[in-house]
Length: 566
Image (cartoon, rainbow, N blue to C red; front, top):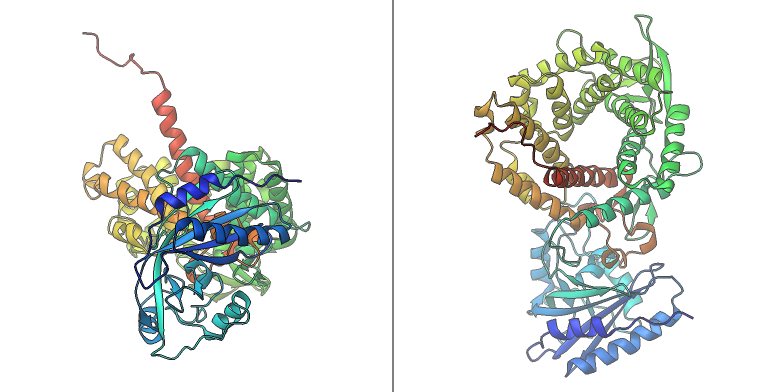
């Protein structure tokens, strides 16, 4: 029989941090949320005239809940209100209309005694303020509200949503206990509800990357295909599939494997690569008689970006696992990309139809072009065939003439980093600077986690470092203040922690075990999709590599050989 964990640490943390509420509210209100990791957290509201009374009431309820739970975790979270004021449903509706969906970060009590009250995490995890993906703002969803209310408060009168009905929105803070460690949680605000982390250190980043990549590994079936994603509020699987994202996710998994060396991850990577090469890529004869290969979607679309990320996955696989079996296939995929490129202007067609290879769509998304040139650069690194480098330079002429830097594309940042290693010319360095110079406010302050912004910044940081070492173009460096750049990068890297499914966040979802350790997109109802996870991983992997490089530089012995003799 498992020994119950000692709650003393949690109790003393909450006692120290909790302050009584003013009259007419109960002096102490504590929300106890418990989950075994298998089912959505059960929440109990404990009230008392003293802290000890409220704590005792809450712990008695927790013990009853935990006796009926069978999962292996004993996650316990305690939250308490820190500020509140009376409002009405009409006033709340006005506030919600000006709030991005899923970004309302307060709890709501339906009465001043907290008989019927909900934490912010309960409201959002049960889609009670979500009007659907066509509604950009938050919105009271009366149907979902009533569904959760009747489950949470059986036997109570249903709430009245009349405009004049008084309600009590409240700010809160809390603490989470995993049976061993107590974590202070951020109070209400954009970081609300997840553990306080002062620094992005190697141990934390390694854990995030390991958890996220092993989540992806668990999504790979015996046939090598992924479970594409989930809507975790109701544990609904996303039924669509996207072969481009199959390949790009595999690329990120291989990046993670370089750091974690997880056997589970390696097996999933091999299954995914086998599926990619066996089932998802087709071969076709081009009009010039050359044999090409294409990644094809279920609707017979050939996407420029699809061929690109297939090359990225295969070049990374070849490099990490020292395996050259796919060299010919990669060259055929690259021939497919070049078939989609105008040999004079450098521009690309974005979507073809298989098997006719006719143009279906000249342009679909700017990302395809960045993916294409980045893939060709990686293939050039691998095989040193000048065809691929020439195609990239031809494309960059097109990008520069047409001002593609205004799109702030992270894929183009990746490619420019690679390109300037081989062609360190002023025009390519200038393009890299233009790609971020007027974008730092957005990077720093964007309310969504937007993980590709960290990828953009990490790739650009590499370019800036080499540009400084190169020394030939100081006027380019003058366009970005280093401290401004670093501040935006660091804020983005820390802010992305709000998109991680920490246990204290996952516990409020329908099936916590399914999504714990993954990453989500809050404004898409906490959607977890393989490509969402992929971009968080790639950004944090680049950040962790930078930390490792810093450590190596600090540990390296000083080189006195270049010093002049006195």
